[in-house]
Image (tube, rainbow, N blue to C red; front, side, top):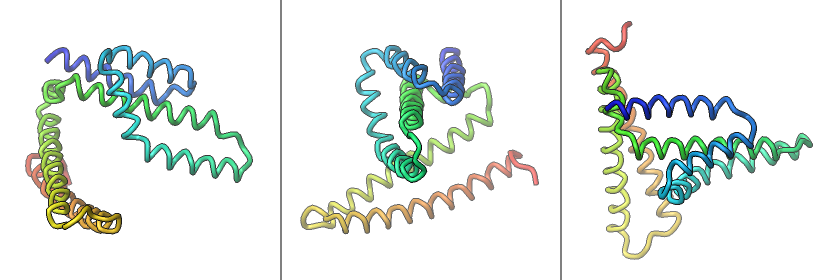
Length: 184
């Protein structure tokens, strides 16, 4: 329990440091130190983080390159800083999640544990629903679904997730309000 609280404190301090540091050398050093701490998990951690941020970082980087070209400025330092920071924060979060029991880390606060329980429950529900949508598309297709079919199925799933999220958020807010979390 104490170890998880220490991990939480270190994680929060590292997140703050990674957002305040702007020198790419320090960001890269932080990423290297984190991978050393990860030990044998370093390769898998880095691969998972890169795959997670690849689409977002590619879109943002290309957009920034276009803007820099348009304004005739050098984009390289900013792009290096941005991509290193996002990769460092993502690796840091994945390592924290892998090594820390959040329920134990937040056990000092009944309210935070309750909110974490609500979020965890909702994420499990969404994971199961995502699997159900994926399996439903596969089972209702005679052959491998084409790109247009996958887009339509994804749009329907996203619509369902948004509707479900709004409903769950309303229910959670009402439950929290009834327990005194919010005051009008």
